[in-house]
Image (cartoon, rainbow, N blue to C red; front, top):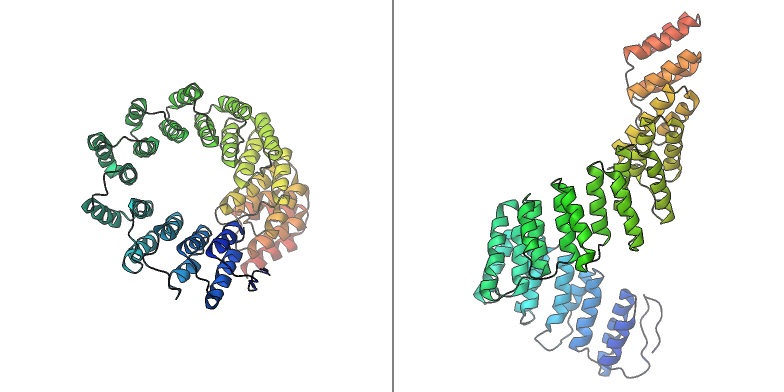
Length: 472
């Protein structure tokens, strides 16, 4: 057998078997090439070769895991005549893929087709997959109808189904009490809750603001809590401003044999920072390093928010250096907080340096950060004007124009007023013209500055021409 490129057919030199094709499909890292192998083997039908259910299930699974839904469906409806019924694994992988891709309707449709067209008798695995897809996709009416079908078939009294139902009712504050009822009914049915059950219910209770109930449920757990359950409850306590309880719960995790992950650490750090306890948050960051858990961008962002809010500039600069050391590039939000913090403590030059770093580092405005870029650029330009750094303020202004970042009226005024006081009235006048070109009408104080500047230079005619020109 020889294999060419992804678009070339495979030439089989020997008689092949389904086991050989199956091995090739499983070991080929490129899904497209795996499909090529499958299709090339199909061409050997005239030589006596025929796919079996295993090769078919394997290629469907590969396509589904790569979200190549159309290719997978094409194979299911292809003229290849495999003996019915089709095996469930061929459909399960595709059902899971649809569910992961948040396509609940397609998940349900494929489930119906696997029964009607392919005579596949689904097990509880397929039913739970479909029910989960409907719940995760917020298709609660369809989920309820589907659950009734399962109940009629007596497929409802098992742990996976209870877990889906607890999760479904826990998603909404109005239905959280139903989740509690389902949870309480489980022991009566001989079904013991697991970590997933507890985690879903505790998450729902925290989301509904019922943190005390969640904490009580946590303390009554009959099984060891998972890191997910700890993280969820810690987050709920932080949101409810019970930061001391959250820290206490966090500190008991190692005693219970549960290792905090990056989510747990980040949650505690965020809670402490929002409570203006950034010094304690820094200590948690140190613990994070000792436990060999690498901070992510969310961790750093939360910590920078807290440090900058508390005006701890030295520690904030240390965190920026640590971010770079770990390969994390600061985003617009982190830069903005640091720049504002530096301005608040009077470090205007340092703030301008970080604005330059942000710009030169390729942190570009987009739809979500556009207003943030406008604010921080204008704030720096205004601070430089007030600090008598007009030339650098003008450079920030030119950078804003180049990047189409809106210049605010106050920034225009600060530049105009500054250059007028400096005696450079022509540059002030050119800024006014650009201001008018941008559709921004100067305030009275701006006109006063530039006109006064011309008169002080005994250039009344130019002042009059400037005013008259703006009226045309």
